[in-house]
Length: 545
Image 1 (cartoon, rainbow, N blue to C red):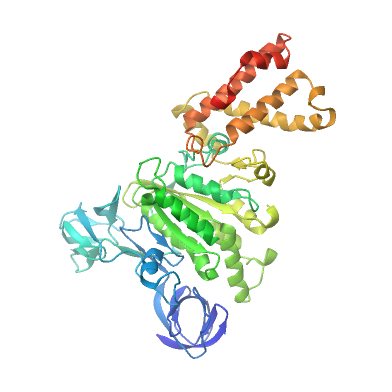
Image 2 (image 1 turned 180 degrees about the vertical axis):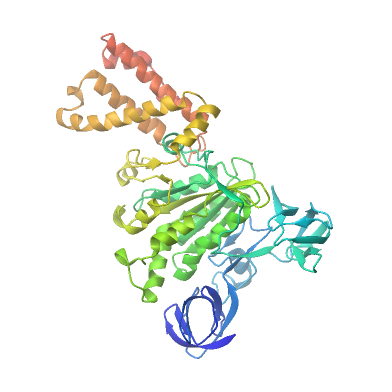
């Protein structure tokens, strides 16, 4: 199906093509730029082009492809660096150099690379869609190959094959290969969704102890400029207790993405001892790339994450930042002259965001295993205003809210998670897990820690009026113990190997030592000993705790 360009407005192109479908991919111009149908009219279609349209002119050809934006799924995704359209940036660099030309394209997966396929089904067996039929060793992972559709297997051979080469066939003549394609905007199927019940251990004490995250849950990290969103997400990517990580730099600055790629390539995985990049997929869509590709990038990333979830793995999706995705959505909506909502964002911002976040969860996959997809999304509210539309839309679907405080960041307190405004809806379910798996003392220690921090906040106003020296000894003790909790427990050094990651057992030891010291001094104060004397009696090396 071919036509011509009859209108151009920046990245929005109008073509005289009939019979197209919404979200169908259209190749635009002599350079065959990739675009997506975003509006259908009687005799024409409006296409949002994913690439730079400079130099495009009226009358150039346009051709429909009859397919939506698809992700190619199969062995070889791990360690990959893709753009928002799943184009492999490392291979394009080798072929085209440092600057990508318009219309540049390459298969996401290396077609010529050979993989050893081990079948798990026999000829004559009936298989359902999504059922495992074999496996491929992908680095340190067992990559399960599933049936793309239901049918009877006629042949399934063991041996070495190219990625999309035929490894078998159905009795009706259909081919079976180790790769498949999937439309990125359609969630992948599963048998049923389960309630999150296991913790997502991040190694960040303020998160794991006070506001725990759940495998299969969603969390947002809102914070103004310079509050450490990127550093916190990268720390979680390095140390989170998950099998695979999909990191999306959505509108991120190029220097930050370059730093992340360099660090991930050299860093050793603390869980396996291998390179961290071997269990990571990076979708890099920097701020100088077209906004339409930025809008598509999170769907490309979540589709790849769901693919590995369907193998029974625990996958973590990190997006930095979802605000820039929403800004791309706003720019596209404005170019289409849609009715704007609050602050110019489209009226469907909340529903589009909720639909994306709903793709997280713990599921029973089509092959009967349990897999999970967790999401941690950073939000960049302008001016640190958490009442703006993107933050509020995220709050409707997120199970945890980790607010980053600019005042804490300015005091070099990392992570700058505000312990009064943050919350986690997974706390009760995760609390039971920590109580049974770590220690029965976990709930009491958590409650006492929160109580001390709350009492310190109430005493701050008194201290500002009468001064610390004018306060009672018991109140000064609360300020002293709360300060220790803030500086020695809640604050961590992201660049220190000893402090960047803390397992839950160690977190409990640290907070228990601080609380025990507080109780000891309380008893001494009851015996009419001064706070100064009680502190000198302890002679605790706080830095060694």
